[in-house]
Length: 349
Image (tube, rainbow, N blue to C red; front, side):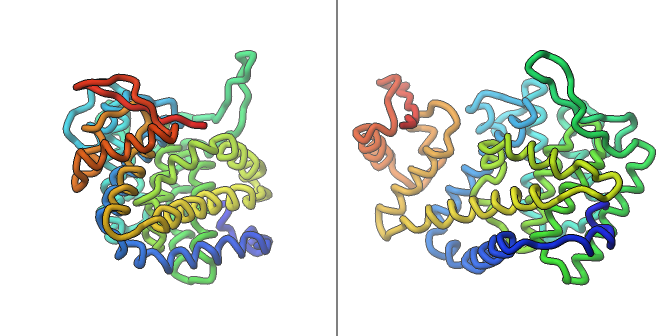
């Protein structure tokens, strides 16, 4: 809302480096359909891996963790949550599935955000689908155990009005088409996080809404490459740029540029990864090998041949074993247990 104020937008200057990033993202957007036509089997493999990584990483950023095999089973919906952490993970899975499958038919409004938050929280027993009822200051715990106040969000009694105005202003600017969506999206996400409308789940909701807005504007790389995983790998920059950009937000004097550059660089990194994977595709067994390599890359713990078979249903077990043997010789994986219940582990060198 504060970032969409007319006076604030009039003062915003888009630097050349950001213009270049937006242009590059537009070029990648134009290549998406070509990638999709090249190797549909590999695309499905990437989708499955990204779904697991996105669910795992976005929750882990909030300190919500679970066993890797349990996460895979929860994402595949072959099991039910066994504890609170798994309940949170299952809720994220459901909302991400809704966005993946129905983004074209989801109106972007404050009521829809409430519905998505309700679904995010539906297994956890926490209050979902309602704006916060008490204040929720954003703090960090320092190394000496003391607390540092990072930001004071909008007061509970103002939250409903702020969220209504935020969506009205975003949709108005989107209809006018005078601002590039790749600017409107980070502006929206920062305002959402500064309002901090829920008692719990604000970070996860912000990342889910980012994916939704990107899809609705034709940037669907997050379906195949986990944006949440990239954010997790750069979480210091993620939190630092949000902190810098939020200072002065209440009076409209904040500097949104660092956050905007961070978010767009994250999307650009995802597209480069996406293109790099497709750049290796060749006809015949080459694409099968890439599917296995992508599946291994998506493993977040030790794995078995059976795990790879489930991730690559069109690839034979012999092919999987051949690729593992090649990677083992190259020092990229190791067998930590042999025999019927063999387990493998990725090596980073």
